Length: 72
Ligand SMILES: [Zn+2]
Image (cartoon, rainbow, N blue to C red; front, side):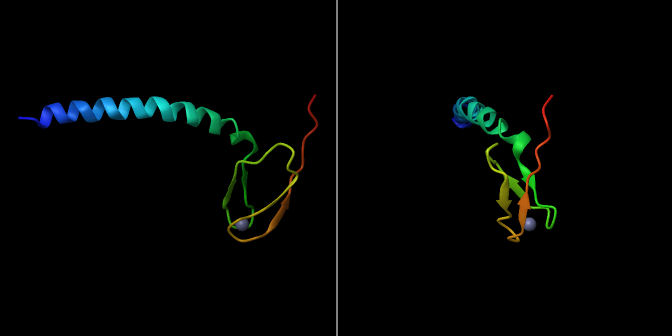
């Protein structure tokens, strides 16, 4: 006794959390198109603002210059 009740409680808790995190994930995913992967070590640079043209790999320290394509 009690175990099932607890599981249901946990499920409610997790679902509530997932809903909250789901919103955050959507915010983060907006950055994905601009996230960069280091060509030197494969480290994922993470979120970068579109204004950023140069970034330094946090893992190996190599610098990368972003080349933007013309949008037409
Ligand atoms: Zn690197």
